[in-house]
Image (cartoon, rainbow, N blue to C red):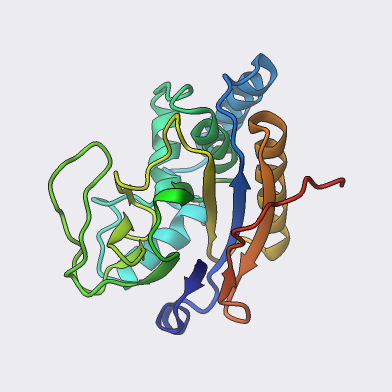
Length: 244
């Protein structure tokens, strides 16, 4: 099973980089109070940071994603990149803590770093995970839905051999590979564009991996993909605990 960013994506978006956490042996436990407190603190920090902006879309990490969406033909005002959508929910005081411990953890990282973060149940993927441009014929059923809603031709999508698992890069999660209470193995991806630095991506990815290890009892591996390293093999073998 491989994680692949295609050549076509890098030709259009050469600065794209992603940090990937492979988490195995996940234990679904309620989040402890100390992590809930950190989650709320991250929300308050985001509110303070965004209070200085004319609009959420003016944040550098959101602005670059809106420009990328326009580049592949998606209206970011109608289809918010996931970091913008999550930030807007925080600014509206929407409470989404408690969806699932794993989802809560990667939402926390997304809020803290204002970066798109999403996860898939690795055992439901067929043949790996690929970021590519859609041909428009792929199958896609949105999260909580039951009808096929295929992507538009040229849309950036995450997909496997069966169909699309996330539309418009990181806009809308699919139902088939969603994280559930039965998820034992997951792949979590942090997407970045300029101006997010390599060091910032490293920091966010390391924090996500550490939280998965500490609060979900997961065995973790981290990988980084870029134009110079566009793919990696997802190990099907046991991942030993890190002693770092």
